Amino acid sequence: MPTWISEAADSRAASRTDRTPDPVRQEIAARAAAEGFEAFGVTRPEALGAAGDRFRSFLALGRHGEMEWLAAKADWRAAPRAMWPRVRSIVMVGANYGPAEDPLARLQHSAQGVISVYAQGDDYHDVLKKRLKRLGRWMAGRFDCDLKVFVDTAAVLEKPLAAAAGIGWQGKHTNLVSRSFGSWLFLGALYTDLDLPPDAAHRDACGSCRRCLEICPTDAFPAPYQLDARACLSYLTIEQDGPIPRRYRRAMGNRIYGCDDCLAVCPWNRFAQQAAEAALQARTALRAPRLTELAALDDAGFRALFRKTAVKRIGRDRFVRNVAVALGNMRADSADRPAAIAALRRLLDDAAAPVRAMAVWALAQHVGPAGMAAEHEARPPDPEPMVAAEWADAVGRARSRGGATSTC
Image (cartoon, rainbow, N blue to C red):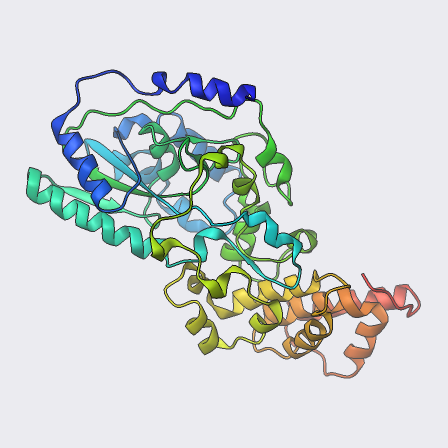
């Protein structure tokens, strides 16, 4: 058994303090399990400790990129009582969304788009919020308490709170790792004025393992336990507007929504299990969608395909922008390559400027500089600066090479 595994196993008994079971906590835990939550823990508002300072440092370094909503209520995130002075205990719950297959396997099929595991089923915001509200209503009636429920969209640091509640620990990739569920837990938080006995924080069980850091295709981790979102493919494909920065386009491969590499490679996933809840399991249509078909989506088609999923939140234009980049990364020996080139030519006239910009770059990967020069001559100049810049780069390469044909 690897050293880092045995160290974690030895720490199991030490991860929680011995105490007489609290009947109120036990009743809440049982009710949470009945609502479908597989993980449960309790912590205090002050248990965040240094996590608040680390979050402020993350913001100060600008590593949140365009996610200004993170900075807007930074004080609430760093100190739960700043949001709600009456909170005395925080109940943390987790729902397993483990995949049925290795997410990394799809990266080898360049004609297929890879959507992050969490977004292949129903939108977890909706699924967990309904469960958590039912739990909250029951608690309010049973114990005459006040409470607030949160699932990801509020100013809450869910991962540090879950670690403080003993559900797991934040790995070197900053995501939560569970001994029982590996990387695959959705988290919910319930702030209450009930005085509940807290669980002990979970000890770090990463040991000397660095797999999550080493597999990152864009080197998004400046150091262990630090993330620069601006270099993270999840951020780039979901949160960032406009064209994908040039230095990350090749690294995207066929990832069209999010990235699971650092999660999927974690050795603790050997203890993971497939999601039991049907709503959180992958839809057949989203497991291995063909890129050429996705490139043809209009707004209505996009909304129909991604109805009730997290993907719908980014909108058609940003999604097809990602698809265009993935088409540019399709391997030359793929049977879908001729259809990919045809799809990219159609996207050169797309109504969305970021889509057109990425279509220019992607087409250049297949037809080379001379081919792009011919394409450029056959169409009027694009009025959008971001698109014109891509054309200038593609045509400029043709001129600098004397018109020599190249297949990148």
